[in-house]
Structures are given as structure tokens and as C-alpha cells.
Length: 161
Image (tube, rainbow, N blue to C red; front, side, top):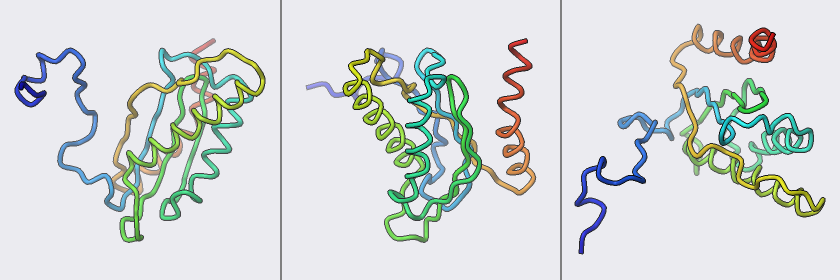
């Protein structure tokens, strides 16, 4: 029987190339700048109730993953940025992918429950499948990214005018 391993990646129409660095251990202690987007770049995060869910779940994340430290965080109309610190020395330290996956899952479930309770018809799964990250390697880069996150709402307003 043929298995997926027998076919070159290009022959599989549903094969997605990973955005992760192939040799990087995403459970290693480090600082990451993460961007996650809505499907189709829809401005769903302008919905106040969804925005509240995103904030509440972000604030609750350290209870689920005590070894993480949250840094800057911003919600834009169709995406969000955050900086997160991982501590691989903690017992049961999560990978970056596990953290992002849990956040996306928790927000999706909360949004679906909200919609069912209010009899609303919004899409349940609103996240783009993947996420983007930058491994922050020094203090200067960290400060530049923090500033970028802080300035993102003003930059959006400038672009829209």
C-alpha cells in the first residue's frame, strides 16, 4: 500500500510547507514575536464580543502554561501580535506551537459558545491555519518589535487615510 512518504511533496496537493525553522527547538527558552491572522483577513476582531474573548483568553494563558511570560500584545481588526517568553527549564514546558494552538482553540470554543447562546451566525473557526513567528535574538530587536506592536494601531489609521 502506498503511503504519503512514497510521494514527493509537490505531488500531494494538500501538502503544506511548514513555516517553522527546521532545526530550531521551539521548546527552548527564548523570546518570540508571534502574529496570528483571521481567515481571509476578515476584520472579525472589530466585533466587541470576540475582542473581549481574545483578551480574556490571552490573560488566562499563564494559568494554563505557568512557565510562559507574556510581553506586548495587540489586537488589530484582522490579526494580532504578541511577544511571549518561554522557559524550557520549567517542568512540562510547552512548545510555542502548543501555546498558539491552545490559544486558538480556546478562543474558537469560547466564540462558538457565545454565538450559540446568543443564536448568532458567525463563523466558528475564524483563524488562519498557521501562525508567523520571529525568534527575538537580542535586546535591540526586542525593543524594536515592542515599539512596532505599540505603534501598530496608529500605523493602521495612517494607511487607511
